[in-house]
Length: 100
Image (cartoon, rainbow, N blue to C red; front, side, top):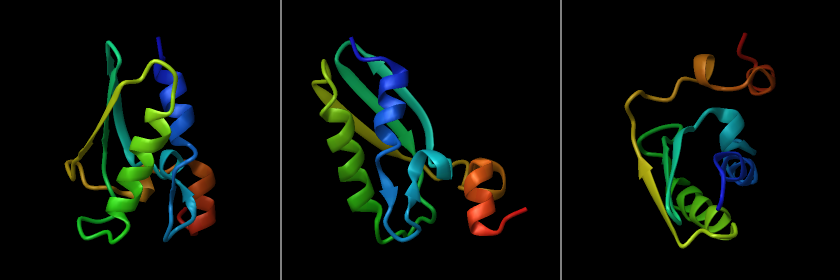
């Protein structure tokens, strides 16, 4: 059975192509849920009009779907709460983006 840690580790491979940083480190992943062999990833984008949204979503489906024992991946995009790098990004990302 796939674990939350395995899902989150796989999600580290997905980068926002405009920023070039992991969606995990950016704080775009709000939750992951595993029920039987189905994984739901609840996430946001850097903005509601993010042009890379479809690419990021397909990459999330691909990396999580490639994990053993995963039959289905659902990606739920939400903008509540809206993404705020000051509070949601890792300290490393804040430093890279010049946010103190």
